[in-house]
Length: 206
Image (cartoon, rainbow, N blue to C red):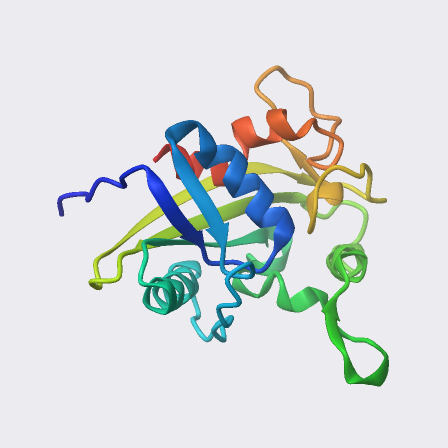
């Protein structure tokens, strides 16, 4: 398959997650691309009914490309834990879903991190704590053309959570750094350092 070149200009980021939008914006701006989030355009969030990262990323990218009649980029990413047979995986965000007061739904990432840790703790002190973040990017054009790119970053899970600079599961994920420094979590890393080595950066490089 021949890859279609993404031209500078407006690009819809098919996400309502501001943390994710900030990371994607930082990765794209050097290339003359002007990212606009689906949330800013009041585009609806499609239900993520796919069973793989690629299916969900394509669902979101196509919905935004059709809704805005513009090229759209969607990211579906998640945490895959070896001892949990790859879970939470494609259901990474679902593990954070919570009913707030008066029926309001929201995401509680501290609760989600605790859920992962609880399942690891059940397996005893010698449990394999290795994990990786994976990111699948889908680009969709209004004419129906689409492309997929995947990236990963490997590391291990720590407890308790540390750091305030990331989002999602970042405070419990310690990446395997090339310089041998293994004792910082994604949420303790300077955002630029994280951007340079993250699963999202790996997918963007591709």
